[in-house]
Image (tube, rainbow, N blue to C red):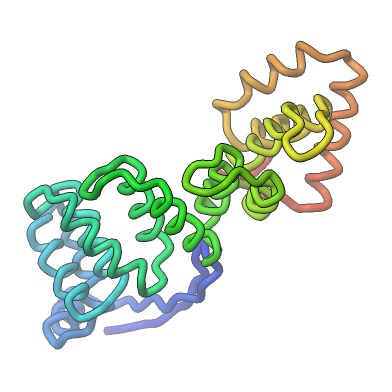
Length: 252
């Protein structure tokens, strides 16, 4: 038995989700249906049968399915169901990324940054991060902001850093909001502004409890009127951008 629904993922893509019973899933997978192979791999993995999961992910990957390649690459990198092989993970992440899979591109960027399975190459890491960011990956957009701030694999460019941080921030990314706060506090590419910095930290802390401490420390260092102004600006930003929490809600 089969039913079909559609959902939208974090990159704004519309995906088709098919629900089939176990027998139907196996039948479709055996016939070469890559979607069914990936779903069967997910099901086997959830049951702890990692070798079976890897088998189905690899089958989909070899048929050219980017999601299958992404998931098989992850198993190679983790050593789940297959021998641990970072170089093999790089190869399959590359295949998935070349077909537009932003998650694969981000994992590839991490491997190039850390030198796992490949030599450290910050320019290549930045290239894949920006590729994922252009695809609409929120985490990649936030990461791109940091790369341009620090000049990691790309020239320092505060205008581009702010632009990428803003793209992620309006989607509720706490690290992007923090990044905008740090830029305001340091005066990166603009006039130094403690109040503006606190505004962004207030917004970030509303979405990430780990940022509450830094936000409070910053607030304690400012005059009460500046803190009140920062809160007013944060509330105004919240209303105008309709920000969402990384965890589903926000609370200033």
